[in-house]
Each structure stands twice: as C-alpha cells, then as structure tokens.
Image 1: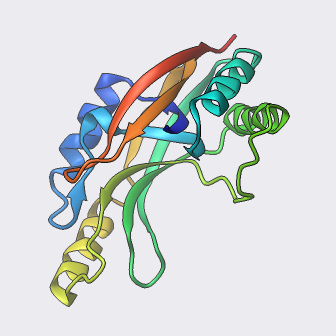
Image 2 (image 1 turned 90 degrees about the vertical axis):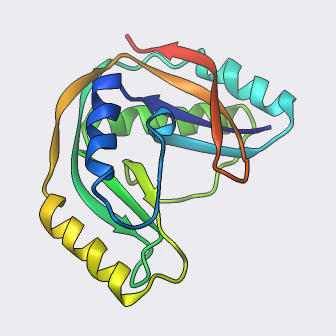
Length: 180
C-alpha cells in the first residue's frame, strides 16, 4: 500500500489555492481534494508496516498550531517539475515533523534522510517545457510569487493511502490523529 502522513487543508484554503492555480497557464493542476502538506512519505509498504506506522502515530502528542502558506515557487532547478506554495516554518510544525519521523523510526520504518521543506504542491510541470511555457510560468510567479494565505489552525494530521491512476493520484484518508 502506498501511503503518506500529511496535514489536510481547510476547504476555504483549497478553494483559494485552486482559484489562484487556475490562472497558471502551464502544467497539470492538483485537484483541490488532493492538496495537502506532506509530513512523511511512507512509500509503498506492506499493510503490516502501515499498521505499525498507524499505531506509532497514535502515540504522537504534539501541540496545535497555526499554519501560514506563503510564496509560490518551483522545485526542480533549471527545469522545474513542480509549482508549490511554501509554508512558514513554524517551530510547532517542525516539531511535529521530527516527532513523526522519530515514531516511524521506532516502529521500524526507515525513511530516506531528506531536508524537510514544508509546502503544498499545486501543479506538476511537463518534463519538456517550451520556452513559451517557461515564460508563462515566470510571469505567473512574478505576479503571484509573494501571495500569502491567512494563517489557519492545524488541529490534526492524517494517514492517507495514495492510489496512482493515469489521470492522477487518488488520496483516501485512513486515520486522523488529533493534536493537543
């Protein structure tokens, strides 16, 4: 089962982001239902491993916090692959991420060591963008790059199953974990 842990976004946030992304003239836009902030990607694991991860997440007792999304940008270097909006690195968000990784490690799930860059993916870009598409992307980023979404409360995180399909992934929530 392919799974990940993430923060779900309130409807008003995904609606705002969808409206902004609809102005992006290139790439495949992420549907509002799939917008989230990934805390840990578990990958494709046997159900027993996902169950162990679930049990470990039930022991997470970190505090609630407010999250602010800010600044459209890209990942992928000179040939961008993804358009995203970043998250201000609140200490409570960073603590939640560290706690989750630690609990997963304790449950026997060894995640790749990567730098945590909190963000919400908004669009996936073609592997071979034309110069015109790159110019349209640059214009979009110049216009909307400094965009901020008002802070919203984060009161839980979720374990999702991700099913890959030709038209994009489908994310189904498996469990919710409240923050204190």
